[in-house]
Length: 130
Image (cartoon, rainbow, N blue to C red):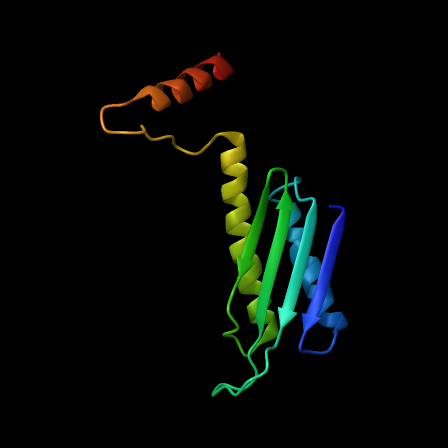
């Protein structure tokens, strides 16, 4: 991956948080080698909350032909839980992207009785396998 940017919004920069984000980004690279850029925002917005300080994490992954965005609202009072939840969501979206890219997503007919799309996908799989 070429670029990783980490920004802290409304909170001080932390080496420990940066290390955790780097570790999670390296984990995403195992699911797809196609990640070109990763931009991560860790935030602790101002305001009065009943739970105290809340943390949110936003992630934008750039892959060929698409951008994958994860924008979780600040709901966690532990920054590491917020990071874990955001990266888990990013991993699921990245896995979906890889399945689409590899053609492993089930193709449904366009309308009832129209099996043209399904036939095209089945014919392509037959050509590839044999």
